[in-house]
Amino acid sequence: MEKPYIIGIAAFFSFVFLIIGCVVAEIWWPFFNLFFFVLILLPSLFGSLESTGLLGSLGDFVTAVFAFSVFAFPYVLFHSDVINGWSFTLILFSNAFAAVAIVLFIRAQLDDLH
Image (cartoon, rainbow, N blue to C red):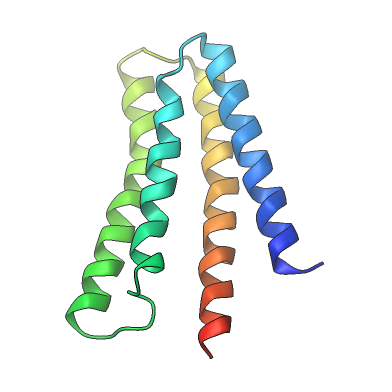
């Protein structure tokens, strides 16, 4: 299997688990994770992968902050009793599949550079 297919399958399962997690909780606040998923890709799309020094370090830092936010936001919702345990678990599975898709996307971009 090629990387685009695996990226698509991982992204599909990520969205499915996110939607099921929202349906189980009967609340759509966890859907804001999609916003963080898009923000994670922005530094790599705007050239921080091919640059070193300050711009590359800033891009890595911003990517790490957004990646942390993807996992922290559902925990805050769970801790404040907005979502239940099942929903929290499904959203964490969604985040795991999204992390695989994002890592493979960035790796594919790096392969294209070299």
